[in-house]
Amino acid sequence: MNRSVEAPLPRFPVSVTVDIVIFTIRDDELSVLLIERGKEPHLGRSALPGGYVRPGEDLDGAALRELVEETGLDGRSLHLEQLRSYGAPDRDPRGRVITVAYLALGPDLPTPTAGTDAAGAAWTPVGKALDPGFTLSFDHRAILTDAVERARAQLEYTTVAAGFCREPFTISDLRRVYEVIWGVALDPSNFRRKVTKTAGFVEPTGERRAAEAGRPAALYRFGGARVLYPPLLRTG
Amino acid sequence: MNRSVEAPLPRFPVSVTVDIVIFTIRDDELSVLLIERGKEPHLGRSALPGGYVRPGEDLDGAALRELVEETGLDGRSLHLEQLRSYGAPDRDPRGRVITVAYLALGPDLPTPTAGTDAAGAAWTPVGKALDPGFTLSFDHRAILTDAVERARAQLEYTTVAAGFCREPFTISDLRRVYEVIWGVALDPSNFRRKVTKTAGFVEPTGERRAAEAGRPAALYRFGGARVLYPPLLRTG
DNA sequence: TCTACTAAAGGTCATGTTGACTTTAACCGG
DNA sequence: CCGGTTAAAGTCAACATGACCTTTAGTAGA
Image 1 (cartoon, rainbow over the protein chains, first blue to last red):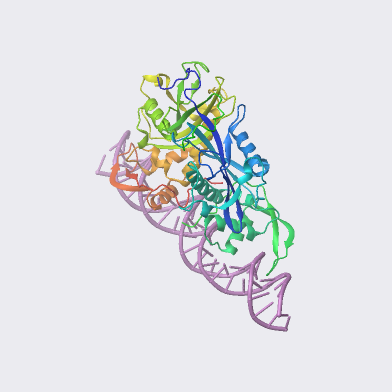
Image 2: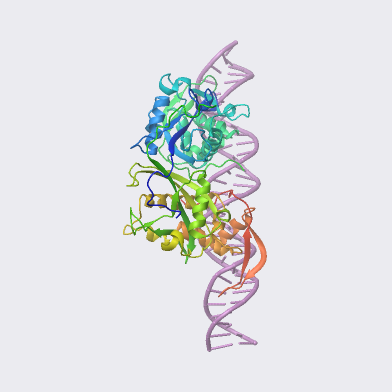
């Protein structure tokens, strides 16, 4: 019988982990938090932060806990969403390990504090992490690739881009998020028109930010809207 | 490395299953394949088809296998994609069971053949399955709700709607897919313009289908395009 | 055969959004 | 005061959309 709803649990040894792709923007580059593994397998290699789901713990709860442990940040203040699960039988040499990948976004986050597992943690530009010469552990390259594509798509239909900006922010700050993640240049004027005319995306604080050069930019905060309608499409 | 067992896996009893939300359109209603559970827990209740992931089996492979077992259909000819994973600690009274939900779409599929576990399988309108008076097993109501929303969103940005139509199909057939899944009426003329002018969505076969009444409709086949650009948005 | 009915297919037109581009505003340093 | 710089706002054509109308091509019935 294929659907053994009565079979004793578990059918075979399975472990479940969560891995988190934490994105931020540093120095105009999309960056991901990678740790250096301190144990076998893949000792010394870079990997996504993550860990085992604990008994009595929800998947989202495990992701939140790992996020706090790795970055010291309260995940409830960040955008955190499930990406997808990965379960190839040979993805972990130790045995059958299925991982649930999460995507987290935040404004220019502090360098993770040393301690616990985050000792070897560092922000790495995504371009570097996905370079053919860069080795990632397990199937983390595929996970990271999927996460980048998800983030790019999310910018089109949602307001998550604001999650990359520390408030208050300027329209140019927000535009740079799109430009960095999409890897294209956007027309500043058209971008402003779109963003300011979309109800609930940004709302002005009334303040201005003195710039190094040029006219001072008006400051905004996030407006609370979740979806972006109509979407802000990448030019096909 | 021959120290592959160095880090003992913090194992507690975990099982991993795949559950499949199989959608089709029958009698102008979005319908989902539900089985009647023959065993505890939830004996006699409706549930999504699914089963345990086997050793040596990929998640996608498990979903494909379950799809074949439940419907007798080759999943490679259907649209099949991972939806998301569900892992609340108490979602299964037997113990810790984490499930990876999949979404499958197909044209008006045959009633599942009796035999194996599909004996109690039946197509159920989604409206009925999500009715407060209808009881679904485990967290399958939440999974189904998420699947419906995913399907609705997919119609906007992709060409999966064609996957609900048996070829060759008419523009009206395709339009009915949108109307049924979105639950709105679309302007036939504007819909045709959009669909036929989107490169790769549909291509004419040159044939016509005699109708019960009215002018015979031209027949089309799927054009092979995956994404729909610009998207066909639900009117906000 | 003629007429009514039906649905497909195609056309019109006003509206709104987008992309490319220009102009004005506000601040800097020298 | 002037040139440089960036923000902000405006212009305009191209395009996509929604609402609506007309024509086409078939069936059923008198």
